[in-house]
Length: 237
Image (cartoon, rainbow, N blue to C red; front, side, top):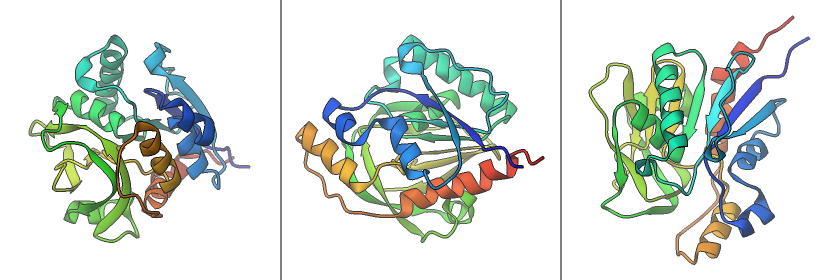
């Protein structure tokens, strides 16, 4: 009998209340997109000061988006960055970090996170995968240009020269759209877990204009992460 994979979600913030009421919150979106998989979930609200548990017993970690900014350097952010620094060094569990989570990872790698001088990148965008991105299991079965949902104003501006870290994709607005760190850690600046109706509602509530259209590429990315990094680690007895 196989044991269901257990995913730890590090929740780094909460979105606008009308969006939560209609579609759920950052952590819910991951679970909704992956509801066809048999998974157990534990959500830890690090933005409220909840302690990250020992990773023993978990098969993977997802890190959510947030309305906060990494450069604000709140205590919980510093602590989460420290936790990520250990994971980068030890490569002891698969991690998928999204948007704010991607920026936390960038900071943990010694990179610079700042407001994007080109402005916010909102709506459905085309991310160009480079050759390494096209070959990475996270983007298996997808085209060279993926269509994904985006809402962010901060970016990972630069990274130190690290042999364990590679950029996997870019846009003209944001050069570092996706990262691979060793064998276990991946991050993306965009939101694979957000579907078009959620993003439209978010912009409606925030009174922002953006072009949004449906795409299945984000869900495929999440499926790829589960199939390549999580299911092979599930114990079979």
